[in-house]
Length: 392
Image 1: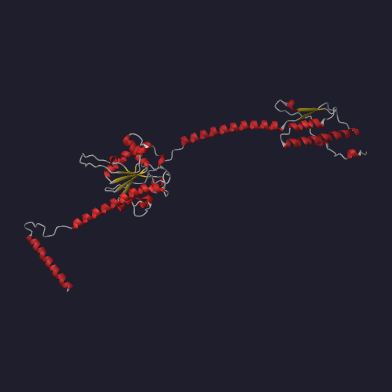
Image 2 (image 1 turned 45 degrees about the horizontal axis):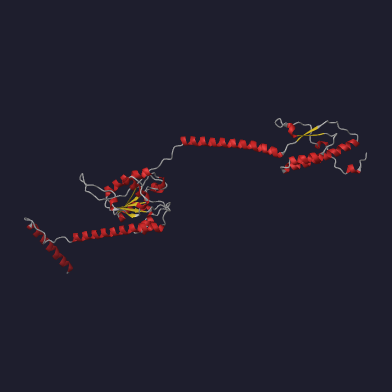
């Protein structure tokens, strides 16, 4: 049987590609909200329904493609139904077909709200678990032990200058050498100010007393990464210990390497913090001498050692420039060089006095020693004659 040319121009659609229309799906009991009912007897209103379907699903590109494909299928179904009428093929009449549709935006909104609630609950549960785990680890994990510092005081008696630092750094505590960190300016400022003849390495810490009559100690022995990790209580507790060290060894002067040391001394002595206008670098008043000793119990009174407050040499402190620090240290260096020269001059004078000893004629000869003196004179004359013979 020949078909009309109009029907031949239309594509042949297989019935297996039809979308099932009688299958009932459930959306939490709200199925009727998403139904579109179409009756074949009334004709398939493809334009109106597909337009409304496209409007509902226009929120995403995927829903638009689905609506277009559905439109094509409906058109093909209409054509094939007309073709079937001509070829005496008949489908069983269906009073109404049910098609399920739902806007993709609504699905996404529902899924996003559920996922957000799930994610928020999961995040809160994770944070709670993390807090519990950290609290458990804090209870079970022991604190890191603080190793004792290997740095030792170098405070022999009769020093020109005793240098007092805040506390050892971690590298200083590990190596046992003062101001051992490479960023520290201590050894550089000692040399540039004239206190030392060369720039010594930290390993020469224990040679300073014999080379330059300069010693070293700290107000706090506990090593830390930097001085800001110390408490005021620790600093204040170190003041009487420092006073006792100075009183025992009696250096000519004490240099506090850092403003915070003098602030601790001030708090202990005055019972209050030092005011900004009261602080100054350099030599302090004689009334502030350190290590005073009162006479009693067989000890002589001592007026104490003058105090010089120098800048900190830590590389972490950036409150002053290198030039400003150098100016303060130069003042101390000039005094140390002068005192060293005065000590050398005094020592040479003592040697000269020892050489100017009394002659034999000025010595009073006790009675009964004439024979010995005569014998000694004879031996001296004999030895002199021998020397003269050898020379000839």
